[in-house]
Structure formats: structure tokens, C-alpha cells
Image 1 (cartoon, rainbow, N blue to C red):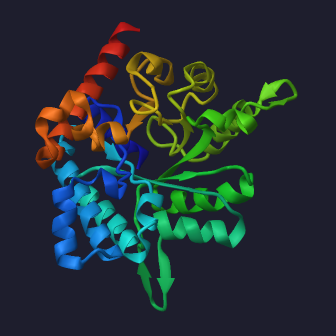
Image 2: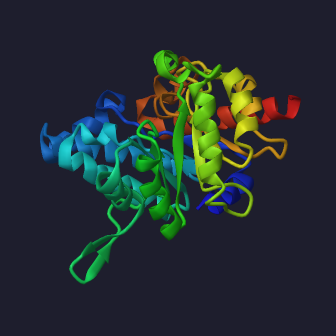
Length: 308
């Protein structure tokens, strides 16, 4: 699947991913009202509203972007109907030719880790039949439990030719409480990065490994170090836009070939209609506002890469 991601990035010229992370208050009021009129003010009504919200954004941006990243917690908060909306979103994005990165941040051991992997990127056996439950192309994985937690994902990804992004240096302010701790004089995130490169060597695509890393845009200096540590791993870069990252901060996440990284923006795109820069679109045209925000993000990153 890394080959498809690389191909999509080359085709669009846009190394970006749209984070489909909808809170109910992100959804325009008229969309909520329509969903509630049909399903009531219920979990089903909320799930319908976020599904319609997602669908419009995908319809207006899919030709510009290579991938999307739905954050599963935003769907789980609405229970089973929310998970159904998650699955509808995954399937619809794949129909549009997009690579889907399931932002699930799972991290456990043994059979539990294997069950997570099977559920999200693998196949589950039911009697004489096999089913593909969620069917994302990539997932995010927390490596804190070590190889015991990661190896089951590697096994399933190898079988299905799918991939993962392992948390290495995250974009949140308190990430340094653990990730920056020195071990034998070196920060923990650097040691995790080395392990990602080691795991990745077992699972290579044509140009890059199926095993990538998550490194926040808010830490460009660490990104520079980790790019060298993991030369064949794609880096998923959260923290652009709403969390403060800009194109000029991101150039060191990319290799000289202009590849090797994909930058995520969630609120900055899906809530663009609420921003002053795109207020002229209005809530009725939230998808068009998202398209304009995608175009601006692509321009920012392209210009930054050209100037490096």
C-alpha cells in the first residue's frame, strides 16, 4: 500500500492528508438539523450528521489529495452508530481512490494486538468465511509496549500488503515528558526511530517501507534528526495549521526526492468555513471552503520545498 500512497502523492503533487476528525460542533447547523429531523437527537442522528459532513468534504477535495486520516475516537464517541459512520467514511474514501490512514493509535500485546490488527487492516475468520472489518490501508500504532505490540501488526500488514505509522515524536506539548527523556545520552524518540527503521527494513515497498513514523510538525529540529535516522520510512506529520506548523517548518521532514513525508491537517481543513479567511463561503458551502484550504496548504508546502 505504500506504493499506492507514493503514486497518489506523485499524481497529485500534494504530500498532504486530510484528517477527517469531526466533532459534532464542527458540522454546520443546517446539516445537524436535517439529520436530527430524520433520526432525532440521537446517536444515530449525530452519526448521520458527521457522515454527511465527511462526504461533502471528500466530494470537494478527493481530486486534490492522495489520502485521508479519520481519527476513530471522533466516531467512537457516538457508539455503534459512530463506528458505522467511520466504516462508511473509510469505504467511501476508498471508492474515490484515496489511501485511508486509520488513526487508531492502538498499542497492546499478543492476541489483543493481533485482534486490533485483524480488525483494522486484516481479515477475520467467521466459520468458513473471511471478512474484512474496517479495511483501512494504514493504521497508527503506539510502540510503548515494544516489539510484542508491534509484531502482530507487522505480520498482518505483510500478509495484506498494508502499512502502519508508529508514534515516534508526537506533536502535543507534553510529548517530551517521556519522548525526550535521555537514555545513554540519547533521547527516547531517537531510539524509537531507529527501531522503526529496523522494523521497516523487513517490509519494504518499491521505494519506501510499509512501516512509517509519526513525527509532529511542531518539532522541526527533531524531524531533521529523525529523517536521517529513518531514510526509507515515510513520516506522517501532524500539527500543521491549527497546532501551529507551517510549510517552512516541514522541509526537513522530506527527502531530497520531495517524498518521504505526508503532512496532516484536520481542523484547518474540515473547519475552514469557520475561519476568517474562508468565511465568505458560509456554512452552506463548507466543502468549498475545505477545498480552498487544501489548495492553500498545497501551495504553502510546495513553495517551501522549492525554496529549501
